[in-house]
Length: 333
Image (cartoon, rainbow, N blue to C red; front, side, top):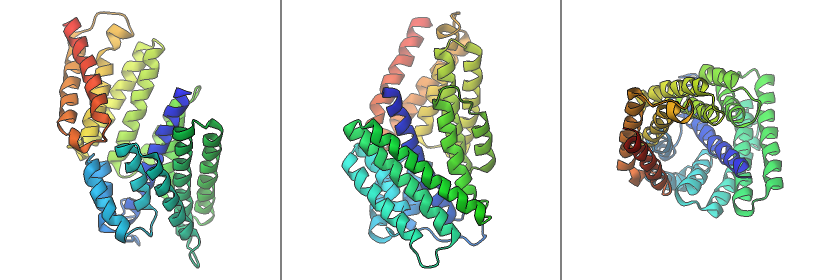
Protein backbone atom coordinates (compact mmCIF):
# COMPACT_ATOMS: atom_id res chain seq x y z
CA UNK A 1 0.00 0.00 0.00
CA UNK A 2 2.90 2.34 0.74
CA UNK A 3 4.26 1.69 -2.77
CA UNK A 4 0.87 2.56 -4.27
CA UNK A 5 0.83 5.77 -2.26
CA UNK A 6 4.26 6.73 -3.61
CA UNK A 7 3.17 6.07 -7.19
CA UNK A 8 0.00 8.09 -6.70
CA UNK A 9 1.89 11.03 -5.25
CA UNK A 10 4.51 10.92 -7.99
CA UNK A 11 1.86 10.98 -10.69
CA UNK A 12 -0.10 13.72 -8.92
CA UNK A 13 2.94 15.98 -8.61
CA UNK A 14 3.94 15.34 -12.19
CA UNK A 15 0.47 15.96 -13.56
CA UNK A 16 0.42 19.38 -11.89
CA UNK A 17 3.97 20.07 -13.05
CA UNK A 18 3.17 19.13 -16.62
CA UNK A 19 -0.09 21.05 -16.82
CA UNK A 20 1.67 24.08 -15.37
CA UNK A 21 4.56 23.63 -17.75
CA UNK A 22 2.23 23.29 -20.70
CA UNK A 23 0.16 26.31 -19.76
CA UNK A 24 3.11 28.63 -19.28
CA UNK A 25 4.83 27.39 -22.38
CA UNK A 26 1.77 27.88 -24.55
CA UNK A 27 1.33 31.48 -23.44
CA UNK A 28 4.63 32.97 -22.35
CA UNK A 29 6.85 33.12 -25.40
CA UNK A 30 5.79 29.54 -26.20
CA UNK A 31 8.95 27.42 -26.46
CA UNK A 32 6.80 24.85 -28.26
CA UNK A 33 5.48 27.13 -30.99
CA UNK A 34 7.68 30.23 -30.80
CA UNK A 35 5.86 33.15 -32.35
CA UNK A 36 3.33 30.99 -34.16
CA UNK A 37 0.08 32.42 -32.78
CA UNK A 38 1.02 32.53 -29.07
CA UNK A 39 -1.30 33.84 -26.39
CA UNK A 40 -0.41 35.85 -23.27
CA UNK A 41 -0.14 34.39 -19.80
CA UNK A 42 -1.03 36.58 -16.83
CA UNK A 43 2.07 38.12 -15.29
CA UNK A 44 1.42 36.78 -11.79
CA UNK A 45 0.71 33.26 -13.02
CA UNK A 46 3.89 33.24 -15.07
CA UNK A 47 5.88 34.54 -12.09
CA UNK A 48 4.41 31.82 -9.85
CA UNK A 49 5.31 29.13 -12.38
CA UNK A 50 8.88 30.38 -12.70
CA UNK A 51 9.29 30.69 -8.94
CA UNK A 52 8.06 27.17 -8.31
CA UNK A 53 9.63 25.17 -11.12
CA UNK A 54 12.59 27.19 -12.34
CA UNK A 55 13.80 28.68 -9.05
CA UNK A 56 12.49 26.18 -6.48
CA UNK A 57 11.09 29.07 -4.43
CA UNK A 58 7.73 27.90 -3.17
CA UNK A 59 7.14 30.80 -0.80
CA UNK A 60 7.55 33.35 -3.58
CA UNK A 61 5.32 31.21 -5.79
CA UNK A 62 2.54 31.43 -3.19
CA UNK A 63 2.78 35.22 -3.15
CA UNK A 64 2.48 35.41 -6.93
CA UNK A 65 -0.28 32.83 -7.24
CA UNK A 66 -2.44 34.57 -4.65
CA UNK A 67 -2.34 37.68 -6.83
CA UNK A 68 -3.03 35.58 -9.91
CA UNK A 69 -6.14 34.06 -8.34
CA UNK A 70 -7.55 37.54 -7.84
CA UNK A 71 -7.12 38.68 -11.43
CA UNK A 72 -6.17 35.70 -13.65
CA UNK A 73 -8.30 32.84 -12.34
CA UNK A 74 -10.38 32.22 -15.45
CA UNK A 75 -7.73 29.85 -16.80
CA UNK A 76 -7.14 26.55 -14.98
CA UNK A 77 -3.37 27.03 -14.72
CA UNK A 78 -3.57 29.34 -11.69
CA UNK A 79 -5.73 27.08 -9.49
CA UNK A 80 -3.70 24.04 -10.60
CA UNK A 81 -0.52 25.67 -9.33
CA UNK A 82 -2.27 26.72 -6.12
CA UNK A 83 -3.43 23.15 -5.53
CA UNK A 84 0.14 21.92 -5.91
CA UNK A 85 1.34 24.55 -3.46
CA UNK A 86 -1.35 23.61 -0.94
CA UNK A 87 -0.11 20.05 -1.05
CA UNK A 88 3.63 20.76 -1.07
CA UNK A 89 3.84 23.73 1.27
CA UNK A 90 1.10 23.11 3.80
CA UNK A 91 0.01 19.48 3.34
CA UNK A 92 -3.44 21.08 3.28
CA UNK A 93 -5.58 18.45 1.61
CA UNK A 94 -8.82 20.42 1.93
CA UNK A 95 -7.27 23.42 0.14
CA UNK A 96 -5.88 21.08 -2.52
CA UNK A 97 -9.37 19.63 -3.03
CA UNK A 98 -10.95 23.10 -3.33
CA UNK A 99 -8.42 24.26 -5.91
CA UNK A 100 -8.75 20.98 -7.78
CA UNK A 101 -12.48 21.74 -8.07
CA UNK A 102 -11.67 25.24 -9.30
CA UNK A 103 -9.28 23.74 -11.85
CA UNK A 104 -12.00 21.38 -13.03
CA UNK A 105 -14.51 24.23 -13.38
CA UNK A 106 -12.10 26.38 -15.37
CA UNK A 107 -11.14 23.44 -17.59
CA UNK A 108 -14.79 22.67 -18.30
CA UNK A 109 -15.31 26.33 -19.20
CA UNK A 110 -12.70 25.94 -21.95
CA UNK A 111 -14.73 23.09 -23.40
CA UNK A 112 -17.96 25.05 -23.09
CA UNK A 113 -16.73 28.10 -25.00
CA UNK A 114 -18.88 28.93 -28.03
CA UNK A 115 -17.12 27.55 -31.08
CA UNK A 116 -14.31 26.19 -28.90
CA UNK A 117 -11.25 25.58 -31.04
CA UNK A 118 -9.55 22.17 -31.13
CA UNK A 119 -6.77 23.71 -29.04
CA UNK A 120 -9.32 24.81 -26.41
CA UNK A 121 -10.79 21.31 -26.38
CA UNK A 122 -7.38 19.72 -26.04
CA UNK A 123 -6.38 22.06 -23.21
CA UNK A 124 -9.68 21.55 -21.43
CA UNK A 125 -9.23 17.80 -21.40
CA UNK A 126 -5.65 18.05 -20.20
CA UNK A 127 -6.62 20.25 -17.28
CA UNK A 128 -9.57 17.99 -16.47
CA UNK A 129 -7.09 15.11 -16.27
CA UNK A 130 -4.95 17.10 -13.83
CA UNK A 131 -7.95 18.07 -11.71
CA UNK A 132 -9.17 14.48 -11.50
CA UNK A 133 -5.78 13.25 -10.41
CA UNK A 134 -5.70 15.81 -7.63
CA UNK A 135 -9.12 14.57 -6.53
CA UNK A 136 -7.81 11.01 -6.54
CA UNK A 137 -4.84 12.03 -4.46
CA UNK A 138 -7.21 13.68 -1.98
CA UNK A 139 -9.21 10.45 -1.70
CA UNK A 140 -6.06 8.48 -1.06
CA UNK A 141 -4.50 10.88 1.44
CA UNK A 142 -7.62 11.49 3.50
CA UNK A 143 -9.40 8.13 3.36
CA UNK A 144 -6.81 5.63 2.11
CA UNK A 145 -9.53 4.79 -0.40
CA UNK A 146 -7.74 2.60 -2.94
CA UNK A 147 -10.86 1.89 -5.03
CA UNK A 148 -11.79 5.57 -5.38
CA UNK A 149 -8.19 6.51 -6.23
CA UNK A 150 -7.95 3.73 -8.83
CA UNK A 151 -11.19 4.89 -10.46
CA UNK A 152 -9.78 8.42 -10.63
CA UNK A 153 -6.70 7.10 -12.43
CA UNK A 154 -8.94 5.52 -15.05
CA UNK A 155 -10.76 8.85 -15.46
CA UNK A 156 -7.43 10.66 -15.88
CA UNK A 157 -6.51 8.46 -18.81
CA UNK A 158 -9.97 8.84 -20.28
CA UNK A 159 -9.44 12.61 -20.52
CA UNK A 160 -5.92 12.17 -21.85
CA UNK A 161 -7.22 9.81 -24.53
CA UNK A 162 -9.84 12.38 -25.53
CA UNK A 163 -7.10 14.98 -25.86
CA UNK A 164 -5.09 12.55 -27.98
CA UNK A 165 -8.10 11.92 -30.23
CA UNK A 166 -8.62 15.68 -30.71
CA UNK A 167 -4.94 16.06 -31.43
CA UNK A 168 -5.07 13.41 -34.14
CA UNK A 169 -8.34 14.46 -35.74
CA UNK A 170 -7.37 18.14 -35.90
CA UNK A 171 -3.83 17.39 -37.05
CA UNK A 172 -2.42 19.52 -34.23
CA UNK A 173 0.66 17.39 -33.59
CA UNK A 174 0.56 19.09 -30.21
CA UNK A 175 3.95 19.01 -28.48
CA UNK A 176 2.46 19.77 -25.07
CA UNK A 177 0.23 16.69 -25.18
CA UNK A 178 3.19 14.61 -26.31
CA UNK A 179 5.15 15.90 -23.33
CA UNK A 180 2.39 15.11 -20.83
CA UNK A 181 1.87 11.59 -22.13
CA UNK A 182 5.59 10.97 -22.37
CA UNK A 183 6.16 12.08 -18.79
CA UNK A 184 3.33 9.99 -17.38
CA UNK A 185 4.41 6.97 -19.40
CA UNK A 186 7.93 7.45 -18.05
CA UNK A 187 6.71 7.50 -14.45
CA UNK A 188 4.62 4.39 -14.98
CA UNK A 189 7.47 2.56 -16.72
CA UNK A 190 9.86 3.32 -13.87
CA UNK A 191 7.44 2.36 -11.11
CA UNK A 192 5.57 -0.62 -12.54
CA UNK A 193 7.08 -4.13 -12.62
CA UNK A 194 8.24 -5.58 -15.94
CA UNK A 195 8.26 -2.17 -17.64
CA UNK A 196 11.04 -0.55 -19.64
CA UNK A 197 11.36 3.24 -19.46
CA UNK A 198 13.69 3.64 -22.43
CA UNK A 199 10.99 4.42 -25.00
CA UNK A 200 9.34 6.94 -22.69
CA UNK A 201 12.71 8.58 -22.00
CA UNK A 202 13.42 8.82 -25.73
CA UNK A 203 9.99 10.36 -26.38
CA UNK A 204 10.40 12.88 -23.60
CA UNK A 205 13.81 13.91 -24.86
CA UNK A 206 12.47 14.33 -28.39
CA UNK A 207 9.31 16.31 -27.62
CA UNK A 208 9.82 18.01 -24.29
CA UNK A 209 10.22 21.70 -23.53
CA UNK A 210 11.51 23.53 -21.55
CA UNK A 211 14.55 21.32 -21.41
CA UNK A 212 15.42 22.02 -17.79
CA UNK A 213 12.21 20.30 -16.70
CA UNK A 214 12.66 17.46 -19.17
CA UNK A 215 16.19 16.80 -17.89
CA UNK A 216 14.99 16.98 -14.30
CA UNK A 217 12.28 14.40 -14.95
CA UNK A 218 14.69 12.06 -16.72
CA UNK A 219 17.22 12.44 -13.90
CA UNK A 220 14.55 11.42 -11.38
CA UNK A 221 13.66 8.42 -13.54
CA UNK A 222 17.28 7.25 -13.80
CA UNK A 223 17.77 7.80 -10.07
CA UNK A 224 14.84 5.50 -9.37
CA UNK A 225 16.11 2.96 -11.92
CA UNK A 226 19.46 2.99 -10.13
CA UNK A 227 17.80 2.52 -6.76
CA UNK A 228 15.81 -0.46 -8.07
CA UNK A 229 18.94 -2.01 -9.57
CA UNK A 230 20.77 -1.54 -6.29
CA UNK A 231 18.02 -3.29 -4.35
CA UNK A 232 18.29 -6.16 -6.84
CA UNK A 233 22.08 -6.35 -6.31
CA UNK A 234 22.77 -5.32 -9.93
CA UNK A 235 25.79 -3.12 -9.35
CA UNK A 236 26.75 -2.30 -12.93
CA UNK A 237 23.16 -1.53 -13.91
CA UNK A 238 22.91 0.79 -10.91
CA UNK A 239 26.16 2.58 -11.83
CA UNK A 240 24.97 3.13 -15.41
CA UNK A 241 21.62 4.53 -14.24
CA UNK A 242 23.25 6.91 -11.76
CA UNK A 243 25.71 8.14 -14.39
CA UNK A 244 22.79 8.86 -16.73
CA UNK A 245 20.93 10.60 -13.91
CA UNK A 246 23.97 12.72 -13.15
CA UNK A 247 24.32 13.76 -16.80
CA UNK A 248 20.71 14.95 -16.95
CA UNK A 249 20.71 16.76 -13.62
CA UNK A 250 23.88 18.60 -14.67
CA UNK A 251 22.13 19.66 -17.87
CA UNK A 252 19.16 20.92 -15.86
CA UNK A 253 21.46 22.81 -13.48
CA UNK A 254 23.18 24.48 -16.41
CA UNK A 255 19.88 26.23 -17.18
CA UNK A 256 18.59 26.72 -13.62
CA UNK A 257 21.74 26.91 -11.46
CA UNK A 258 20.17 28.28 -8.25
CA UNK A 259 17.35 25.81 -7.64
CA UNK A 260 17.79 24.11 -4.24
CA UNK A 261 15.60 21.18 -5.29
CA UNK A 262 18.13 20.42 -8.00
CA UNK A 263 20.98 20.57 -5.47
CA UNK A 264 19.05 18.04 -3.42
CA UNK A 265 18.38 15.75 -6.38
CA UNK A 266 22.02 15.81 -7.48
CA UNK A 267 23.09 15.10 -3.90
CA UNK A 268 20.82 12.04 -3.80
CA UNK A 269 22.27 10.73 -7.06
CA UNK A 270 25.89 11.23 -5.98
CA UNK A 271 25.19 9.74 -2.56
CA UNK A 272 23.75 6.54 -3.98
CA UNK A 273 26.33 6.33 -6.78
CA UNK A 274 29.16 6.58 -4.25
CA UNK A 275 27.80 3.67 -2.22
CA UNK A 276 27.31 1.15 -5.04
CA UNK A 277 30.68 -0.59 -4.55
CA UNK A 278 30.33 -1.04 -0.82
CA UNK A 279 26.57 -1.49 -0.59
CA UNK A 280 25.74 -3.41 -3.78
CA UNK A 281 28.91 -4.95 -5.20
CA UNK A 282 30.20 -5.78 -1.70
CA UNK A 283 33.71 -4.48 -2.40
CA UNK A 284 35.74 -1.81 -0.71
CA UNK A 285 34.73 1.77 -1.62
CA UNK A 286 37.24 3.71 -3.70
CA UNK A 287 38.57 7.24 -3.46
CA UNK A 288 36.17 8.13 -6.26
CA UNK A 289 33.30 6.83 -4.11
CA UNK A 290 34.47 9.00 -1.23
CA UNK A 291 34.59 12.05 -3.50
CA UNK A 292 31.04 11.40 -4.74
CA UNK A 293 29.57 11.15 -1.26
CA UNK A 294 31.59 14.14 -0.05
CA UNK A 295 30.21 16.21 -2.93
CA UNK A 296 26.74 14.97 -2.03
CA UNK A 297 27.18 16.31 1.51
CA UNK A 298 28.19 19.70 0.11
CA UNK A 299 25.11 19.75 -2.12
CA UNK A 300 22.82 18.76 0.75
CA UNK A 301 24.26 21.77 2.59
CA UNK A 302 23.64 24.06 -0.39
CA UNK A 303 20.02 22.95 -0.52
CA UNK A 304 19.62 23.46 3.23
CA UNK A 305 21.08 26.97 2.93
CA UNK A 306 17.96 27.85 0.92
CA UNK A 307 15.54 25.88 3.08
CA UNK A 308 13.36 28.93 3.71
CA UNK A 309 12.03 28.72 0.16
CA UNK A 310 11.35 24.97 0.13
CA UNK A 311 8.23 23.03 1.14
CA UNK A 312 8.05 22.94 4.93
CA UNK A 313 8.68 19.19 5.34
CA UNK A 314 11.57 18.96 2.89
CA UNK A 315 14.49 20.46 4.91
CA UNK A 316 14.12 17.82 7.63
CA UNK A 317 14.26 15.08 4.99
CA UNK A 318 17.34 16.66 3.40
CA UNK A 319 19.01 16.86 6.83
CA UNK A 320 18.31 13.18 7.48
CA UNK A 321 19.86 12.15 4.18
CA UNK A 322 22.84 14.44 4.78
CA UNK A 323 23.44 12.81 8.18
CA UNK A 324 23.37 9.34 6.61
CA UNK A 325 25.90 10.42 3.97
CA UNK A 326 28.19 12.02 6.55
CA UNK A 327 28.03 8.93 8.80
CA UNK A 328 29.00 6.75 5.83
CA UNK A 329 32.01 8.96 5.15
CA UNK A 330 33.03 8.90 8.80
CA UNK A 331 32.85 5.11 8.97
CA UNK A 332 34.64 4.33 5.71
CA UNK A 333 37.36 7.00 5.41
